[in-house]
Amino acid sequence: MHITIRRAHPNEVDALTKLTMRSKQSNGYDDTFMAACREELTVTTKLLSENEYWVADAGQLCGCACLSETDHNTGEVHAFFVDPDCKRQGIGKLLWQKLLERAKVKGLLSLHLDADPAAVPFYEAQGFEVTREVPSGSITGRYLPHMELILTERSEYS
Picture 1 (cartoon, rainbow, N blue to C red):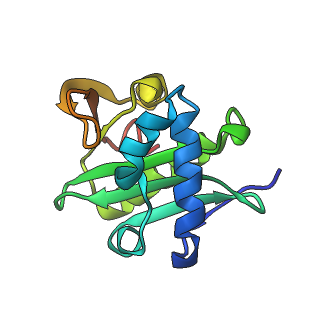
Picture 2: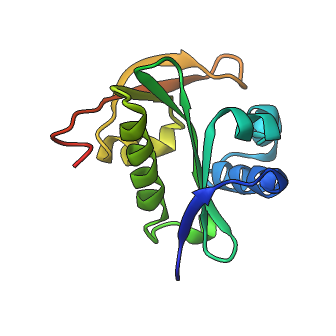
Picture 3: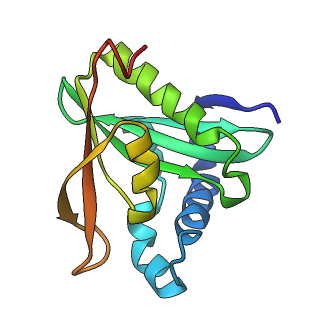
C-alpha cells in the first residue's frame, strides 16, 4: 500500500470526523461515550485553517494528525488517529515523522498532548512522558494523561 502524507483539504472535514470517531470508538467506547465526545472530536474547516492538519492517504484517508503552536516554542498534538482497519501498518509512524519534521521547521522545543489512555503506550514509544492528569474536555469526572516531549536535535530530530 502506497501512503502519502499531505495537508488535509477543507472538503475532507466530514470524512476526517468519521475517521476520528471510528478510531476513538475502536478503543472500546460505547455509543453514549462517543456521543459525549462528538463535539470535541469533530473536524472543522476552522481547525484545518488554524493548524497544521495532516492526513495519511492511501487512496482513502487512513489516518490524521494535527499540530498546533501554543506559543513560539511549544506545540500541541491536537489530534492523532489511525483508521482501525489500517492499524499496525506504519501509518502512525509516518504521521509522527511528519509532525516531528514540522516541529523542527517551526523551531519548537517541546510538544504536549492529552492522551486517550489506550494511546499512552504509542506516545511513550515516541518519547512522551505522562506529567499529570487533566480533566477531559468531553466527559465530566474523567481525567486524561497529559503527556510532554522535550525535543532535542540529538534524539527526536535525527
